[in-house]
Image 1 (cartoon, rainbow, N blue to C red):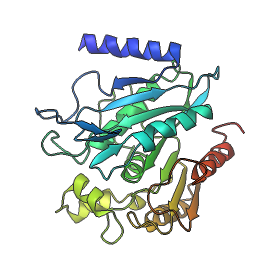
Image 2 (cartoon, rainbow, N blue to C red; image 1 turned 30 degrees about the vertical axis):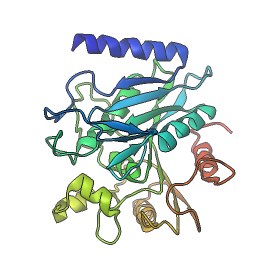
Image 3 (cartoon, rainbow, N blue to C red; image 1 turned 45 degrees about the vertical axis):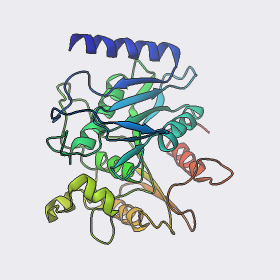
Image 4 (cartoon, rainbow, N blue to C red; image 1 turned 90 degrees about the vertical axis):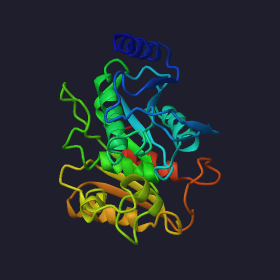
Length: 299
């Protein structure tokens, strides 16, 4: 335990000093709710499967800003994979270009084989990532009141879960660190677990095929919006044939009903999974425009 803790501190120090992209284990001790199991994780070109040992990749901008915004990035993958390459590391580098510190979360994929409660495992990892960033804000030159979360597809469900379920700590948090993200960036997100609206694979992988109505309600995040839900930017394509655009629309309407600031940009075409290349899609420009309006980044 002590060795892991010292390793974590050393890694954080090196990352802070060099600005290098560094991978750290998400937990410096026991992983909450972990069962004894064989680690079967494998990687296919930056897409990870059977993740049971979560980690965080740190991207710090090469600038002298000591009050920068930060974002934890949750790639998608239907809670079956973590598409960390194009919905994680590429996005982190774009965030760095805007002076934003970025942290790519490789979260646990729900599994009864290695999790005592697979339903909360990804949320525990998201909360842990937010805690690590906030606890190390001064060290990494981050404004601890400008730490957001970003998610794509099922990662958008995870991000919106972190943004609507923060009143309960699902991890050890003796320091009482705030686990509420300060803003959300939700890109073609799964929001709801309701029949006819959800992405079936994401629902079944997270909650099981026979989930109770109460569980479906709890993880339908459009039903969990409150007055203290953080502001959000949502973007989706109307012709998305994987995750219905109504997921974003319902979440936006719930935010509006609670008078929580939210912006939404819908594309008439784009299907599911926007490419990052500006020549093919300009969705990220709308994200940065919103961040400027929220005074999270400079023009």
